[in-house]
Length: 288
Image: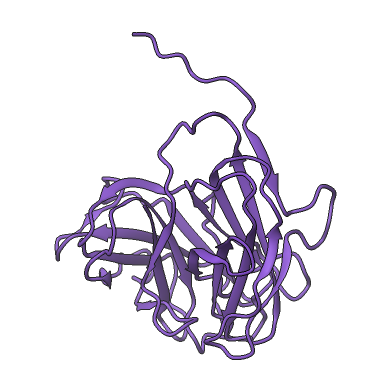
């Protein structure tokens, strides 16, 4: 039987603005204490169509000589929002202002968001009561997506907000050891995206250091998601203004079925010598 691709317009919607602006997205302020999310801020009042692919963009939070770890939530619904995506490690994200050079952090999710949905964001971080920018982009509108979509995201590896799981990278191009992020996934997942940020106390990031990020599953002899032990889909970079950008080249999810109860790990590799602190913080976002 001949399969005919569906035709039609792939619709697009965002809160980035329709004309040029130095501050794309919506201003979101972190909570008054590092471990507390600030007030939820509306990103889109009512989505225009059924969306199947979502991109989150976090910017303008990193600051020179300042620790700036952070956790960002994307919410859906009315005044009593449900958390759609929890604790994206937005810490040290660069952006578009003089106080935040480099570029933003991005995360892509194959998620279904029905037309008419209200989307909002809230954040917590080391820099308390501090405004950052949050952008959201939606694609959809055709009768059905050309790929599998999920309904929610589960985040693994968050300790006390805004901390992720501490991991030691391999230095000068060497692979680091795998570090367990969760001993047992709580749901079945079919796709994954990463989060990475420098740790608390790191205020002197090494410029142009590239950090490669791998996700593994299983026991001590981990299987690399994506099926190749020699390839890494996600690369993060830092600069001397204490800003982290990434993933470099985009954040396409890795599509792979992982059942509930699976151990998941992460390893990272730095292109140069380690920073003074010598560690990073990671999280894994599983779509199901």
